[in-house]
Image 1: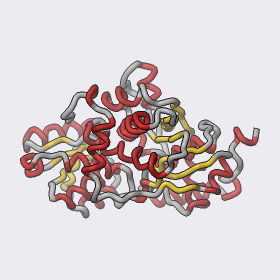
Image 2: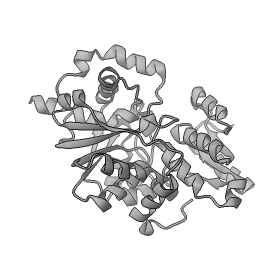
Image 3: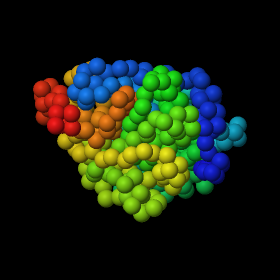
Image 4: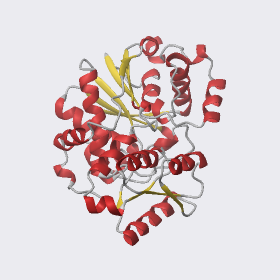
Length: 337
């Protein structure tokens, strides 16, 4: 899974990933959001990786992992245990690059995402009632087929690909002083923190995760990846029970702050992005804004990573029904105080 040991991973790996990814991905905008800046009481720019073709930053790591395969590995294909954005990214870019992709999912995986994976050409294998069972089946398929496992977040090739977002942000918003990054398994924060701190150590890197799935907090308290208690969360894309060993080792020494956000704060952020920016965003994609508008992040000029848009339409409508524009746009509590 990891072609290089973690100590050798650094800016060079992310820069190499960017060269490999020069074609095939969208350069997503990093634009000033005046309405959100007014509400939060600080300059806010949104890095809109929800505008990638499959609606998520996960395309970066997925495509990069595929591009790193040898001709022999490409011929044997790849396997991933994922029912989310990683699966969609692999399916799309596997089709683009001519690599067979097999996605293993538990029986309770969302049918709409499975249909999308199939429509993109991936083989979908349903196995077991839990994600752990799906991971076990993925391992068995790798052994039987001689395929390559592409882990959703702890594969260094994936982490390097995710880190290219950080390089783009530094070029698009050179006057930033803070970047806020959502955390699930940790692939994005590990890659982005590696890139940003190598080039701009003065920039604060803030990690944000839902209070209902605080895997990074659990890892910090334990001194390494440890199981986190999970509860249902609007940010289901961040609901990872245990942070990766590689992602924790890379990110923990580099971040400046780690904050959690409540379900109410996530919902408010989803509503604000829809009502004030015209952006339909999933809960995970709204986590950085949730931290900013709740007063948990203070900065002069902050870039908030909007990581994905793949939210169930019914869930999105429920959020909008619950949050009027006036309620969602109330000034930041910390600012009002």
